Length: 327
Image 1 (cartoon, rainbow, N blue to C red):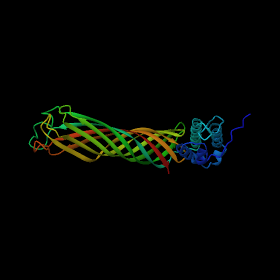
Image 2: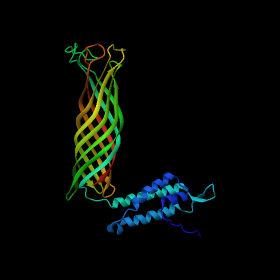
Image 3: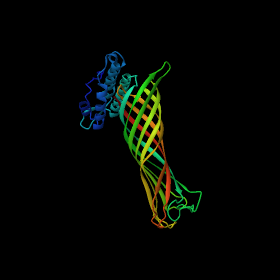
Image 4: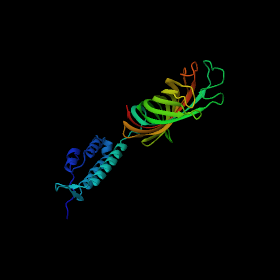
């Protein structure tokens, strides 16, 4: 009759090194250890958290140190790594379960955090008629002799990342728990939307976004440790609109005009925030921003005296993850 699996102290460096587990596994377990070893309150010790801790160490012993093993090149008996990784996964699940039991029910208070995500940009840029120079009043634009004037579509994407903060107030009703608050964020962005004229293939427009910022009101409903919310308010973006025609084929003129700076707009969005414990939470959020009336104008290279004018509207759609610290 085989001996029962022996439960060793869960020391990431020693256990993993002893069993030949890669350094990445040691790092993962090292990250999980402080979460699972956090101090427990009196209520937690009398509840499910202590049970979770005992169960996860037992699972570690059963799965990571079972007799189902393989022999290494040096003849040493080592547990199968897939069973060890399963034990790590189960450990993480029980740690998170323990954290969730400690989550505070009250959403009132302020928070700060970091966000990262991806943004999609769509710009509609119109080739407007000349209002300055020798062609003013003729009704002509850079690529058109008259109305209707061409609108050039541009699309692109890029990453975003930044910081956020806000304050919430919880209102507990008989039938629901409502949360109201304000939130602000600023994010670096690398979003670039590019397009080409359908009338003259040598005319290109580019809309680049370097920064975004929002100031929003948000309201939501709390369900357990999750807060489902909608938000809306003011938005600003540091962007550049550029229109260029640097080839004499098929059109003969050449120009390169641009406009850079902060542009105001509006934002709406929705998301969910999940409390990991009384101080930390994670979020998933969608934001839609719109900016109108960005105008790029200036003197053309040729013909001399012409002042082309392009006006663009930009829509941004951003999906991002967040890690928030309650103060």
